[in-house]
Length: 557
Image (cartoon, rainbow, N blue to C red; front, side, top):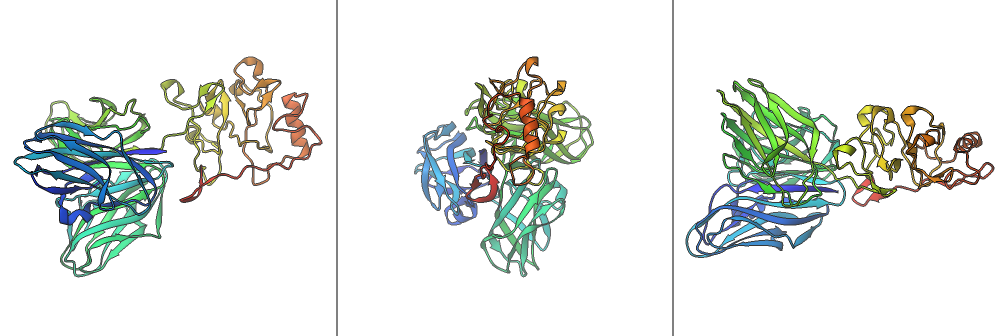
């Protein structure tokens, strides 16, 4: 499951007796007639919940309301803000089931009377039962105008043009497939055909949309996809055709694995601490933040793009939880480029935890332009219970373990983690591997430990585990017993018990007689084994077919 926080930052105070629309993520708001330019279109099924509004100032003499809108009508979520009230207002009760094709945005209304209200942020939680997420980039108040030129923008957050592509790129740290590129054109005076493309490593991707001269509205690529590998740099390219300006209000893509939530700040920093919202569109000297909304969120891979930089001292960029830095990185003095923390992640311990970015440094001279700050919302592994212990890697003590996650396999459909690089990311079909109740892969020595397939016969393997490195590592295949014990070898006495330490090579799951005899001899069982039969028994059991996600052919659940 992936749970992602979507944050929008309206750009101006809203007066009494007005109606405004705010995008799901990004910057700004528009009047009633332009509502369509703020709508993101879902291309999968989601649960939308935890609408939250932060009000920093209000002189209204009447109430204001903010509601989640689905297909142009009020959804289930809403909050009411009393006249003159400030603070955080949340709907913690209601949610909306979002289907493929639904349009999402927020609607802000104010009552009659006098005064205005300043909304710092509108945010919500968008959850998918698998790993699919949406990237949404928008600039509603002053949409991005492109006039006879080519510009670039990040995938998520504030839609803002840059004439240098590297300033818009974000490095992806989870392999994903991007699809359903969609843009909304608010105005178009371009005399020729304009194009929008996904870019991967500075080159055109497969996805693109063409907008003919004078055409407005939404345009979508429904057929092409882009495979993005770990370490690839991705962004969006906007090219205006002919003379005259074309104005883009929103762009979005779908991701098969998590969300790269970027705050496109383009903010000059000269030594005073500034703060930004995840996926929002503006930095501020005020310590602004939004609530986490869910303990199911996982945030990792803090990324910063910085250029130019004349600061005489290092600058710190941090993801903060409840006002304290939890992931941080340093941008050295007079240094530009990409900076990342790929080692740490954050799991909110409470839905009320607050989250934001900060940029700070010691006293010094010069300035630094922070182009983009990004954090990835990554899928939450499904923990399982083995012999009364949880296999989730949720604490420092279990940092090297793997939570059993039902997901697609890695390295070209193989479920083997044969190298250190894959030691903590073993893809599996119902992984169950026990070492004292903890899910395996704790060191390089165990990088190739067991991938088990329920009730499978695994061929071509050595059934003995006699090396010290394998002591206490016994693979459990459907809780098989070893010498009358459960398959939880935790002591030296079990150092020589069998380890079934490979995966099925090809489709057949049956082993030849010699391999089975060797395995049974090593197991030292005096009765038929629940998984590996006694000699002479013909094996005809096959691997259970993996379940396939209804919307993602081939994805193993």
